[in-house]
Length: 416
Image (tube, rainbow, N blue to C red; front, side, top):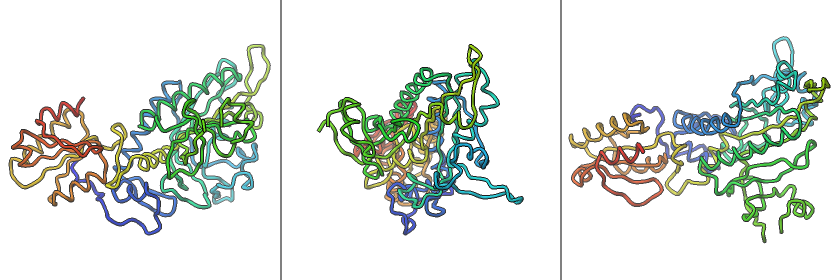
């Protein structure tokens, strides 16, 4: 894409009430637009980042047998009444509305009840199990205080997966597969080394739930990390009894601020019993289905990536997350320079390399500042100096070093 055709532009100022670093940078760079506190629109650049994250997650969910669907945002009061989670005393983040005839509706903050109710129509026999379904869906939560930019919103994009199993053994096998797939996801987006499998509160259904927490100063959680065992414990459950149960020694633990980027949760059979989801086993007996729930906050993950990797100049995207792989700029008005830049732009596109070509007639310093702010992995600059040196100036966003390489070499390197 040519920058001159992109309707968004970088800006110097951000809303006065925006204090989160991730949102400030994303607004300045033209990735998002702040509609109101905790509510952001994702502009073309931001949407491309979200789609890249979604694709990685989708590939991993499909690899373990997940089938993608899309549920509705409007929620049936009766469905949630069965588990007593329509009650605002039990769930205090509901957005509620009503039809013109007075029928009460909720706006989805989660989908366990809705999907599990739907499964009554399809899961009748042990032959129908296991079943694994997931979606990418906007959730709406009436948070008392929206903060941390896109890391905690009132409207956000989430991947939620649900597993339906015959028994605890079958459930645990899939639960472990999800855990492994989550670790692959966070490695692929560049967070593998700083993301920990974390023991957290299991609530009323189980002793522990498990979170995936990324070390991050902007995070809202405090975790204690055992780097030798590559696991962590959320402060909310830390106790001598838990440490003994997990076989963890108390130095071995280091305290960190962290951001939750994923969670996996076992409901056992409790929710199925509440909703009435039973199947007929091989002996003809009726048994409740074992349910698991597995979430990844897609927009939150995008915010964490900005917080983790940004520097004083702007955003730094990992290669496979960036909206474009290359920022290409021409410097000067010399005809040979402009022609060489156009040719390089066309050849990179033919090679399958996504390029943002800054064809604007502005000062080089402005172009380079925007390049750093936008944060694409590689920068190519065509100028009289680069052509005299044999080609194009090549620079990685994470490096201060530049080199002059031939146009052909630049295309080959980036295509690989």
